[in-house]
Length: 278
Image (cartoon, rainbow, N blue to C red; front, side, top):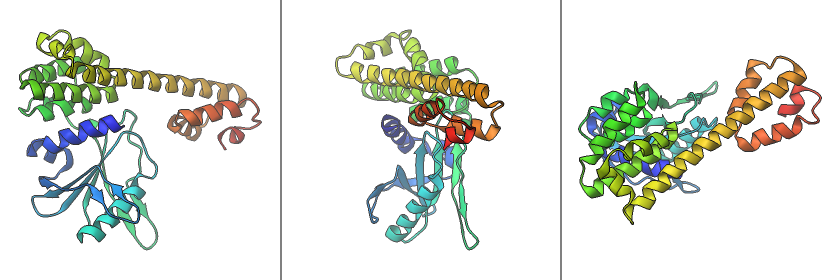
């Protein structure tokens, strides 16, 4: 997620006001230091000041973290202590799976809620139509009617940039495309544009972009492998214990690779479905 963080933060800081407003519902006047002083130092992803004087805190998330709302509460409390005001908060979800995180924590005495936005709810084609290259690049994570056509339009816009901005934009695009399994497509389309293919051969810029493409491909292979493990485990569970409840299927789908391996080992000796999952 580190490379995605860097690329997304860079793009979000440079989005046009219109694009950021459509994405979050806020207009940011300036971005502030993201390091918060708490009992142990916490660094938030993005912390801005809106045009009407409020703090805007944006966290980027590529996985469904069950503790996300609690983390956001901790951040909000730290900001209130440091800046004397509670922030407006947005969790911007960029993962491949459906957004499943709870946005609220509550008890009988109090409740806390933050906004959770799946970037795929945003119209990517509208962002591509904009004149700002950061708006165009981040569109690869949004909802697209034709992915290949969209990538071609983004690359044509990148090709019109200055050489230095072109290199950075292409690198950002290849990194973000990895979140949607589109890195191979970006590589294919880049080869069709000589001005961009020259960047791939550049001794300084080329290796960085190729590394981004390799990261995207590797992550795609890793996620494909994990999905294959999940399906195999579900088939084995059904064979041993009968129809698998929906609740169990959801738990298996949420398990990371290490947890899947533990479940597979337990399947060898487990007598009940509960033994497998505990």
